[in-house]
Image (cartoon, rainbow, N blue to C red):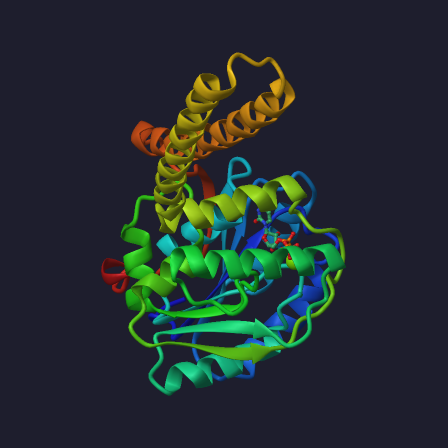
Amino acid sequence: MNQKPALSVVIPVYNEETGLHLLFDRLYPALDALQIPYEILFINDGSRDRSAALLREQFQLRPEVTRVILFNGNYGQHMAIMAGFEHCRGKRVITLDADLQNPPEEIVNLLAAMNQGHDYVGTIRRTREDSAWRHWASRLMNRLREKVTHIHMTDQGCMLRAYDQRIIQAIVSCREVNTYIPALAYSFSSNPTEIVVGHEERSAGESKYSLYSLIRLNFDLITGFSILPLQFFSLLGMGLSLLSALFVIFLVLRRLIVGPEAEGVFTLFALTFFLIGILLFGIGLLGEYIGRIYQQVRDRPRFLIQGILEAPLPPEESGDA
Ligand code: UDP
Ligand code: MG
């Protein structure tokens, strides 16, 4: 890549050996057809299969437009994209999944939306080719997240998005350990928009997100962009203390009017368990925030890059890249 490309495409890859060839076969022609200088940045997120070898082969086939960042371990999709953002050179950047769920042919539509002056183009999947429970769970999370964080994304799960270079710089300057890139980008954008895109079934292999990692991701999304849950909890605590105070007054009055009584023990137990439940939930919630503060203050490197495969820049131009 000898000059600054107009477009960088950033693709995280984790154990995708079965689908990578299909991706190459569709991605490169789609980008060649655009007739603009581009680069593709693959980030191998510590794959344990042959993905890294396949990426290396592809790099040898198209070294002028391909760059590969190799992580030493698995740091997650968003850290992989972050590394891509740190190294990309394009004036516009598009993120894409490696499993072909986001059709590369849609890139031209994203760029068209950017030509209209938008600095961030989000996407809404026309039809979702995911399992039913994923569909419902994300709709629920979408709604909750919108209420809590005030970040407007109709479809938070789709990673096919386009960003202007200024937004990329802002994202790179954030030193966040746990983050959700589309939301971060939205908060930096001045003129965001959304377009409808196609969505396909995973070309091969299986989803890398278990229920557990999806829950973690959604916690990142909410804790990273809002402290409303904490405030809600303080309010809940205040409300419950008030109710408890009223209850104590009621019990004291009963003691004075009715006299000593031993009934109602189970009601008290029920109430106590209920309150303990809320208390544990509150402590857990605090823990989510504190754990993230801890990770942040340790200030370890967010990811380790083992190597980068890229064509060397010609000597006279290497200074400004
Ligand atoms: N991915 C990654 N690191 C991970 C998990 C996923 O780089 O720890 C990549 C994966 O290779 C794919 C993208 O992130 O390119 C989306 O993953 P996946 O398709 O499994 O997620 P889903 O579509 O099920 O949300
Ligand atoms: Mg996928």
